[in-house]
Length: 411
Image (cartoon, rainbow, N blue to C red; front, side, top):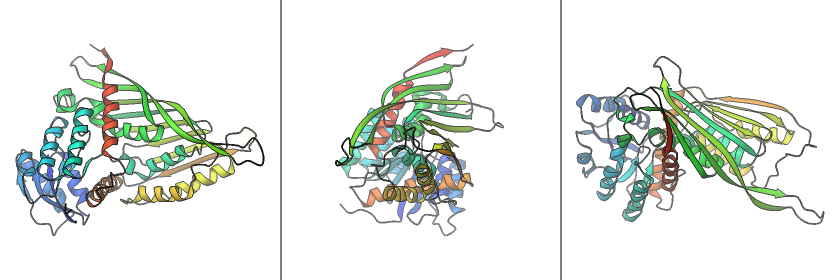
C-alpha cells in the first residue's frame, strides 16, 4: 500500500492540557500539520489551537470537532494522536486503525496489556503505524545511563530505586477513578517501567502496595520488582595462548518504584533515580531528566570512557539528542569490554555532573523525537520504533502486576 509522505495531516483527539502541549511542541516540525482538533468545549479546543498557532503563524485553520469519533472519521487525516483519558484509548484506538489512520496513543495505551496487545495486532493486520507516546528514553541522559549500565562502566548493578513525588490531583478528577485511569502505576508509572526494563532487564517478579486515604483515593503507591538482566561478561583465558571468551550471565537487580501524588501546589515536585553499582552510584534527577551525577572509585580507563560518553550529551534541547549519544556509544563502546572490577587495579575517586537547562525545551525535544520516530515507522514498515509496541505492552503488563497490591487504609 502507498505510504503518505510528510507533512502528515494530524488530528488530535482530546483537548486537555497535554494536547495543548503537544500541539505547540510539534508545531515547528515540518513533518507535522495540525488538521483537526476534537474536544468537548470551545475553550479547550481553542487552547490547543492557540498553542499551535503561536509556533506556526502560517498555519491553515484546523477543523474542530466535539466528538473524537467524528475527527477519526475525517478522510483528510493521516495520523490520529489520542490524548483522551485512558479508558477511551482502546475503543478509539481500534476505531482509528479500522478507519485507515496511523495511531499515536498517549500512555498507557489501554487499561490492560491484553487490550493494548489487541491494538498492536490490529495495527499489524491493517499495516498502519502504531506507537504509544512513551518519551523518557528519548532523553540523552537516560540514554547515557543505559550505556553505562549496559557496559558495566561502574561494575555490576546491585540495587536501584525510583522516587517520584508529584503535585496532588484534585479530588473527583478521573485520575483517581481506576475504572477510568487504571490507577497510578498504569496511568503514570508506565513511563518509569519503560526505563527500568531497559536499564535492568525484564521483570521476574513484582509486588505492589498502596496506601488508601479515608476517601478511597490511593495517593501513595510503591512496588518491589526483581529485574533479570542478561549481561555479556568477558572471561579471561586460563591458558595464555587461548583467546578470552564471552559468556552470558543472568543477574538479578531489585528495584523499588515509589509514586506519591501528595505534594501541595506551591511545593517543588521531585523525581530521582538512584542506581547503586559495585564501584559507585548514578543519580538521575527530574521527571524530565535534567541532572545526572556519577561518582565512584574507578580506573583511569573507566573514567575516560564515562567522560567521553557524557561529553556527547548536547547542551541545548534537540530532538536528535538521544540519537547522538546512542550513535557515539554504539560505535565506540564494545559489548565485550571487561569490567575493571578487580581489587588489585588502581582506582581514583571520580565525580561528574551533567546538567540540562531549559526544562520545557527538553520536554518538547523528547516529544518531537517520539513523533519523528513514529514518522519513521510510517515510512518504513520494518521499523518498530526505538520504543516499540511490544515495549508498551510489556510496560503495561508490569504496571498491572504492581497494581494488584496490598493496601493499607487510613482514617
